[in-house]
Amino acid sequence: GDSVTQMEGPVTLSEEAFLTINCTYTATGYPSLFWYVQYPGEGLQLLLKATKADDKGSNKGFEATYRKETTSFHLEKGSVQVSDSAVYFCALSHMDSSYKLIFGSGTRLLVRP
Amino acid sequence: DAMVIQNPRYQVTQFGKPVTLSCSQTLNHNVMYWYQQKSSQAPKLLFHYYDKDFNNEADTPDNFQSRRPNTSFCFLDIRSPGLGDAAMYLCATSRERTASYNEQFFGPGTRLTVL
Image (tube, rainbow over the protein chains, first blue to last red):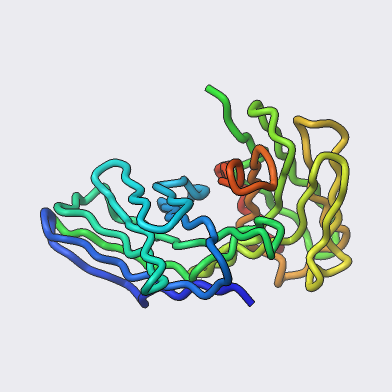
């Protein structure tokens, strides 16, 4: 069945460092791909999405490119801030699973001043 | 602003005492979801409504029930909470179950404590 694998955390970075959080998926066809962010004690917020191969989603300085050939959707940011400290979830949605979200396990990011 | 609202944000109940969590939305979305999230884990889908059609996940315990009296509101009922049901409960909506409109919008969650 469909699944999402993302890198283990926590990821600890200094402010202004470059961020990459790896995400790969297993699914047939072309699922929609998402990154959600969860700040402490809050619900999930959609950070960005991509719906077809080679699409690039971007928001608030974060980017991710839908790579069909490597079944990946890695999250990147050129310069992180302390306020980016949160848990990041990669997810997919696919017709075969009635468009329910299939989540990765989440990656905690801690940015130090 | 259109949004997903959950009340209360924090709920304390006693072991075995029924509890109801509430979700409302101003997005006019057709689909509403309930998730359970335990500490340091991804959200786990309990069930969802597509319009009035209820869709239960195979591994959701019978202790969890849901009601959707109208488009805007959806309730999660826990009939006899156990200690293992302490978690964050998240409500989400999506416009449709299609490739074009399947992104989900989440509420802030209700944190349930069971004493």
